[in-house]
Figure 1 (tube, one colour):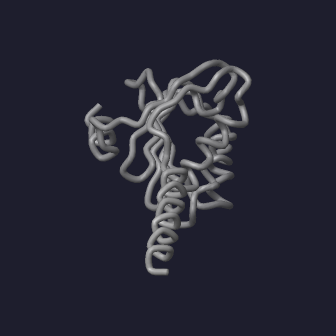
Figure 2 (tube, rainbow, N blue to C red; figure 1 turned 45 degrees about the vertical axis):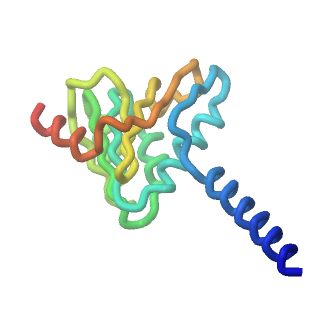
Amino acid sequence: MQQHLQESDKRIEEVFRRLDEGNAKPKQGVFYNGQIYDAYTFVSDLIKSAKERIVLIDNYVDETILTLLDKRAEGVSAVIYTHQISRQFQLDIDRHNAQYEPIDVETFRLSHDRFLCIDDDVYHIGASIKDLGKKWFGFSKMEILTPDELVERINRG
């Protein structure tokens, strides 16, 4: 009887371990053209998982990014760094922020690549967030750079 209980406990522990592994965020991967929804839900799930802050560095943003960032939990800050803020996009930002939890948008012209910071994690993303899945792109979780270091470099210019 005791041995049967121990075996059952081991099986239950294994189930929980596998469930925990399934909830872990992937560290790298590739999405192929046509995987628009898969790529969108991947980024959407990352955004929903944020507990404190989101920082997006992407030179090609529009109002769809504001909507996507609204999936974050209440109290999670969001900042976008982008190459240029057009008059139309500034109007979108102003209207969004008048109704919803604000998203800060700043200009930053020194980045070619896209980065998405979720709390203490930095993801390098090979496509603009608004265009995910339209063409092949890869992503990877960066272990050599923290969001604080990235933002500090942005502020230094």
